[in-house]
Length: 320
Image 1 (cartoon, rainbow, N blue to C red):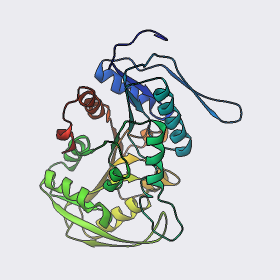
Image 2 (image 1 turned 45 degrees about the horizontal axis):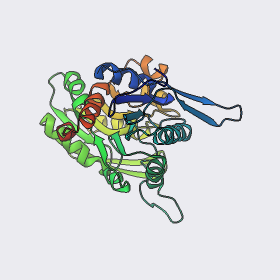
Image 3 (image 1 turned 180 degrees about the vertical axis):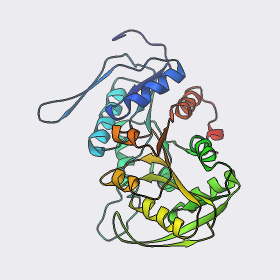
Image 4 (image 1 turned 135 degrees about the vertical axis):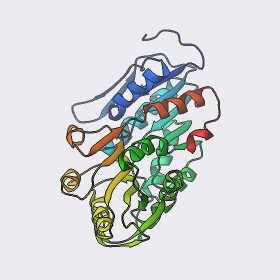
């Protein structure tokens, strides 16, 4: 199709290296072909981008999670956006299933950057007309942009697996920290369950010092819900604390499976019966091999959002 004519406003989906598999699944749902783009490196490590399809006047969606190595994948995305802008695409939407640097959304100490805001500025400067993402760590990050931002939620994807796993037991939804209470409350409402909160005292990044449970989890199937699981320290200590508080079993659900460092070893040695994540970050072989891990796809939800944006239809029903 290189150089061929394209219908004005045609829907075209492209992918960076971090999310090619997800983009292919999205294209299958939409019934379109994945666009042809080269993402290569020069010998010194510089990234080279070349778009093989004509995108003049097209409605372009670029799918790229900014997962590890995050800096490389962010740079790939920025260069892709710039290439499409310079190729005269009518609109370029950055589809970022996992938005990296989202945890750095405010100043927590003197002389530190607000990195999530910087990434937002870079995306706009590179040529993004719109951003679609899933389960931002902090909803206020949408305000860092001067362009539309669609923040999808993983509730409709994760809830069926949770309901199947609890096997009719009474449920207590647990927020692993105070910041996740709104998310946990949304799950508890849909599951018609009780709500508990863990008061977490952190000594330093990625290390949890102490946990206290606010609420009753005794004799319940406890569901710890979070937006992401990184080194799994918080999640595994929360599972241990919940079991000590009398829960009959404990499982967890998280949208983004970052799973860096000792995460898999901690999960294997934890009290968790099961852990459900999505494929916003392409799962590694060791993740897929873990028997307690379930990975559910987001391609149907993201494809429907892309279709509605392309057709200028409302997507508000996808946020609930």
